[in-house]
Image: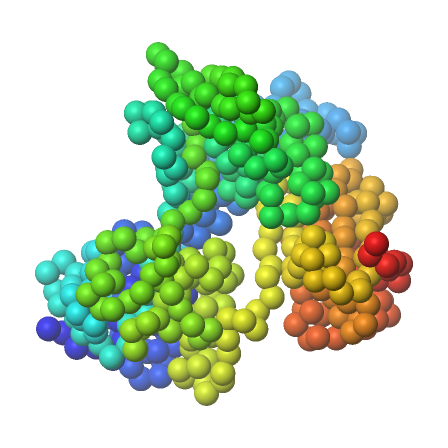
Length: 458
């Protein structure tokens, strides 16, 4: 039995950062990784997908070159092997950076293999048994595979296996019209695939307001993506070199035939083979590790961070988990999960940046509120760049004058959202930003303008 002061299981966004803080505090740390250093974000999530988004945007913009008075000789082509090679190079640099930093970190021992609890404070990995008074679980999540008849007999793709593609699918059928599915839909459409998106809910990205969902659906359809909402997949079968997907919608059954199927219907935590019961760590019905407001599990001295705790499904929430745990343990700073404000982005083009409450959520509170909206075609920077799709929406509490939430669907919406988010964290009234002088020409400069045009939410 090898004793350490702390054991970190998993090298996703929060694990390595926490290991470094613990080592800096003088602790002897063991960190365990079963496969790829860097976790989902580096290997199959943010880093590779946004690299693909960039390649797809370049192809799309090149096809529009004439709109800007630029002439390109001949049709625009996409070399998928080169696209994948670029993506792989970006991922490899990030992954090796994480691995190198941990393996050269004095005071940190790296174990490679699958970790399992064998007792409350004991973990086994590749025949070694480790013990520590503090254990931190950062094992992430993976694609959930729904029980669709016939799916197990079809060579379907997930967000992970999509990373291995170096060819162009002739017709990609995507099961799931939410964040992961829509990003891949637009990317592969811009690469040249036919794309069909099948979503069970009555609209895409159903957690968003209806106007946001509709605007996203509109620009995806405009690019030639076949969007089918209110549609339930009732069967999948192989037909020669093709895959047939049976869909039930409004009581009628139809069929979509394509060459490849991507399953993008939710995520599930990587907790089913950790031996959590041996350590007395409670999970919910979906397998997420139950944690309190400071990310402590039901077992004393054990914390869960990142996607596996069900308290956020983003790289930035995982990083914030690290900050919360480190602050509480090492800085005598009582930070909590409930202190953070919901914020995320959808990386379609144009992107969606969201912070706080949706309009629907504000309405449910019944509290008096104010709202302001602006079409991106009225934003001079967007007009100048020829990227005018989308709109911006901000909601404010009428009495406290604090911003309740915002949805910015449009050029730079994923960046502009932060000026609103920071004001929300400051708990400052919207009038602070309304009186700020922003730089012209930018998208951000219209946020103060919008705050000067608030009207009652009817």
